[in-house]
Length: 469
Ligand code: ADP
Ligand code: ASP
Ligand code: MG
Figure 1 (cartoon, rainbow, N blue to C red):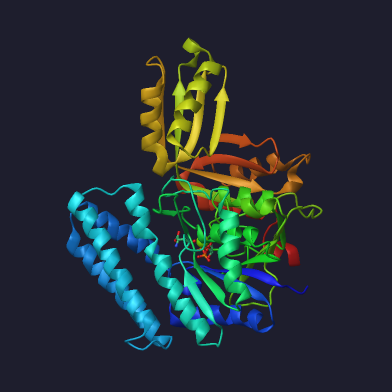
Figure 2 (figure 1 turned 30 degrees about the horizontal axis):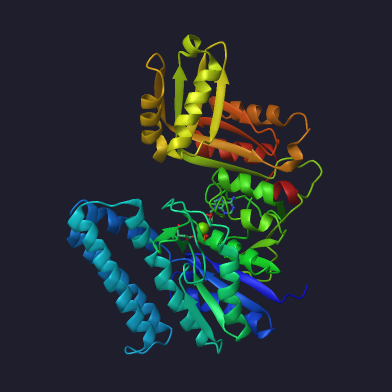
């Protein structure tokens, strides 16, 4: 296929140091030299986002010395990369990196003085990772005779709501991004957009949630009606399981938008859970490709699923650190009333619900929520529910899900899932199957999740050995 416009996203590993950035730039430059217009979207250098979160937390607790030490180390890392990419000490890039660290230091000092870290100030601080890596990518591209210009997410036109930490693009975003980036492209300039962030109508920096650079790339893909969005990864695309857990995991050639969303929602870290939402309507394909093997097709994400005979399940995923919260005593009030008040309380707090299950005879409702939301969930339920109801929490749970559109109408899939869990000694705490039959998820003890993942992966024949043998 011949392309005229591609959006290319490079993640943290692909921006890890000067050599990785140079390699990423060469992948973009290769297409640009073939006459394809490319918008480059970058993540922070590997580890920097976590480092910034740590800096913000240190400042909040009053430990400004260690926050400043970390900022200094970050600055050295960015200076070193800039220098290795050919920037002179008095160059614009080095000056820009120095100024950004100074602004970061001031923002962190503000948090320290107030001893208060709001979601808004955390977003301002954490977005520096991408703002700092973008100039490095421009530098690398310029070194390859590609005329490049880096911009922040806000400058690229991404306008979001005010859900700091998990913001979503507002509808005007798409026209704005188109206006701003088309100008660069028609002037023969390759835009390098700092991923993960946007800005609110008031001009405050917001972030799109962890892994949000994938989301930035698809937002831009939709805005520009790109031919495709390519997310370059350090793996062969979406795999049949987390390759760090299952050595035998293999690449999935084709996935539908729906399948990849389920996978991402149920823990496959390879893609932001909302990344396909902007491109779903227009049907723009998304490819996840391995930067170390650029000619390998990777995973193609497209509107329709591919049906593979005898392979109803395509992947197994898991989310660790989940809490199970059970509301009992519904007999007193009636299950519908309890469910209504539980959901109202959760919606008010904007809590991610992973699973829900209800048992009439026991008059209880169980919820699986991310461990990080458990405290807020308990608080919301205890203050929002009748005092006759009892709310209990079980920690250290995991949710394991099998995903694949071929499960629809297929008998025996759950039987195989439960048989494989039982034979590896895994106890099931809760079960749920979505109406779309795209996934079946089970809650299990946290400590058993890797054993369970391996067993399920094998039972459904998802490994490389199963295919070649
Ligand atoms: P990037 O910074 O490029 O977005 P991430 O680290 O966010 O990269 O995501 C890629 C990582 O996701 C892989 O290195 C792999 O360890 C992990 N991962 C977890 N589950 C899967 C899966 N099902 N398929 C591929 N990778 C997965
Ligand atoms: N740097 C951000 C993160 O680590 C965004 C991204 O990498 O996509 O979550
Ligand atoms: Mg990611």
